[in-house]
Length: 413
Image (cartoon, rainbow, N blue to C red; front, side, top):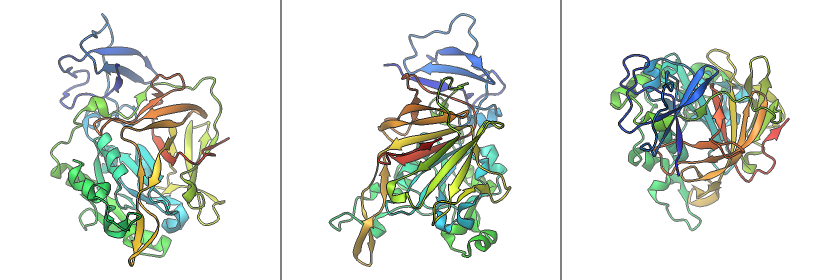
């Protein structure tokens, strides 16, 4: 069965616009230009395809993250991902602020532990955006599913700490295999990663200390944008996408979701165990045609705040919002002073997994399905209700990975 992959990046060896040379055997099908984006497609089974006479070839470059026009250099360079704290009780002013995330192109959010400990964010930055972002934070520890997401996007990964079996056991009190945890994956999965807990790459910022009343490393540590980028590109020689055709996150094009239901507001609960701890929403502005992210303040969970970037005051706004139902479950228990406490680390099934979800854009929505790749050499694919690959509007995207057992999720109005 042919699997169609969206292609809209230039080869890393491009010298000038339109000069992308096709690998032997590649054959392009041209889709008519929509809006500002030209979209081409390539089949894995390429030998039986030949370009139509006079067909328009790809004329990018476009970002693999947003589908928007960008420089040739940015089209070829790998993005940078971070693991970011979102434990609302400890964030600046109860979650009013993020640090640097207004510059991210794509943000994932999902649960981290099965004990009401909130969620964690996973933003992806283009290299040009990160150069212009003084700091990104607050940075927290890696988890296996974040490492898998970084590998799928062929992204560098920045983190501080990693899950391990040091403070966890199975139900019988036994140590689980090291490969179940992020610490092992950081050294064995092939991810290009950087710990930012050094003076050269990160610092605990006093202004965040003033906002939250603590100078705790996990609540105030920020990565320094340009030094981090230099360290990553110096350390890892493969600066360009290893396979740009497979790392494009979406099939970009114009999609008005005609005749689909309206969605002016979306409220997302990430798991029943986080129902009274972490929730966010997205409110649509018909003037900007963007969804603005809000956050509910712990502890009453009734007060909504608008999330802003602490460095520039900008709110977090997105052209596209996804809510994906995923299989999430605890696989160990917290160990404290020799005593097994409640469920602890979780798994989020993405590799080889599939599920249902929602796609929101232009104030409307559609029920969709998604399918994870068989390995980390490709990305998650999305499909419309008709079964065709979903066309996603160019722009910034927010992806909520929620526990599929939350039956009333999301709330749409």
